[in-house]
Image 1 (cartoon, rainbow, N blue to C red):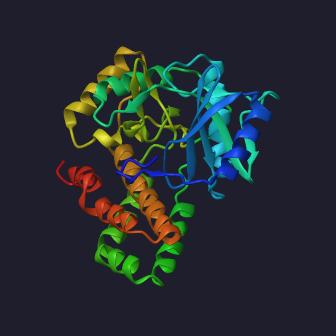
Image 2: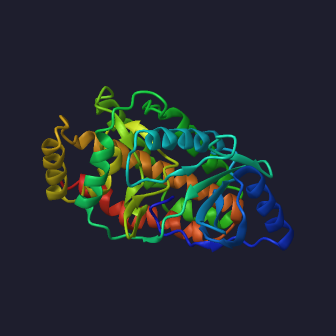
Length: 316
């Protein structure tokens, strides 16, 4: 899930599609289904709320070929955390054959326990970090993708996307307005890549927790597609424009016996890396959907909340 305000769309499927979905779920999970209702969705998949004779479930179908391998890895990682009884996260519902997912129309389909709540985009940062700290303390060394600090592939992807964008007038026009910014951000990412300590403590990070807090009777961190063993800064660079927040996070880590202090260089690295990731995602989204929303999102990277975070680096 992207931290920017992606417009949520409802998946429109005909009766035949829903009949096939019903059958597939019934065969593999033993559900007796009363209703299947569409939920909000993003670029890389569709989501459904399934009501059975006894319960409710959240269905996610990932149909991005590029991300399928990563998606499967994230499911395996969530399963590992579920086995360690980590609270406040998604819970995978296994198939009758004890699998984490099934294939549906050549896509990955996973069933989660339904969480009755709404995303809180203004959830207090320190409460969020307390949830994450509980996860940071879980001893996991294997079974979860690990940060490798390789940026060449990411930058190559950006160069390819910028070349493709030249064939689309509106997209190329928007990107041309920010050509200097893009060059600067790439340069800064390379600079901080050289400065960071790549042997820093690595913990289980979410990567986009700020916009994935589900609040209801309980509080849950959802959408762990980007789960990664990585430095803590990956989760808290969003707060780097407020010195007191970073100070409070450092105190929180200390009080929880986590021997680590937030690094300004690592915050900057993840800020610039995230910008390139966001830009790649938005360009690819436009190439796929040809929509104005994607162009707005690109502009938001250079003029909205992300710019505010980046600009704070220059004021220190």
